[in-house]
Length: 362
Ligand SMILES: *Cc1c(COP(=O)(O)O)cnc(C)c1O
Image (cartoon, rainbow, N blue to C red):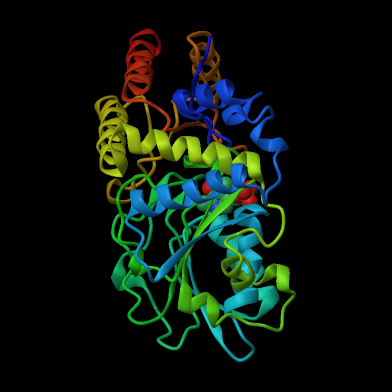
């Protein structure tokens, strides 16, 4: 029996995408072998690769100015690769600090060139409970780019209005909320997202890049690290993670089949409202630290009155078929990650469990 998976990443995948993979595993489209046994230069794999790109392009309405890339190394590698490509000597990049991942991105940028903190909402105890307001951004109009983390997987905060950065290229780590709702891709010069949160399995990273921006990237770095290399070769410069891209294809096909990204947003909003509704209703028992305007629709964090009750909550939830609810290792408490693959019914089950838990322990 499958459990309800609230893991933060790698996270649950939509069941139809997994069932399709199971059905196609041993004999991919009558070829007598699995998709992962095919050459990445063969027509069988290439059609999957291109279908994944065209599905994503269609689902997000990606304009011609932009291009989809499949990369490896995860978001963590992009923390270094973004400044390697876009931060030339003498230039400076602005970083908006909203959590652990933006801190890591900033630290890597400092190893490559000059990086500046243009805003931070860090608290004296190092936590973050909101993202900055527009009037708190101290932007350098000459910056090479501004880097933002759209959703803060660990602290459970999310940008609900994109920062206005004028004419400076906007670069976003969207690892944990990519494709959670329709978006205007044209606002961004470079978007990157590890697939294992909201889009597929680990092993592949999706980037959506403005073509002229990556074409201008530095050429005095090894070829393999240049985004332009991957762009010029349709992400087939070297062997891509074919199985991971195939699974992303299955997830994207599922997303299209259920009604596209507008439908995903409708479900995600419903899930968030159900869960935050329960937290607000029992605010004397469940403590949700994130400020209302910054609440994440992907990662919902809260605490019970004592750490012991947190542990009991996690253990009893597991017995009830719900896993992955333990908070991030340094944060404690509870984190329910409710990515696209988590259904509204799954969240209803969690909310009933929470109601029952208050009745028994409140
Ligand atoms: C998980 C995560 C990362 C790190 O991803 P890796 O694939 O492990 O490198 C970076 N940024 C955000 C926002 C994340 O959620």
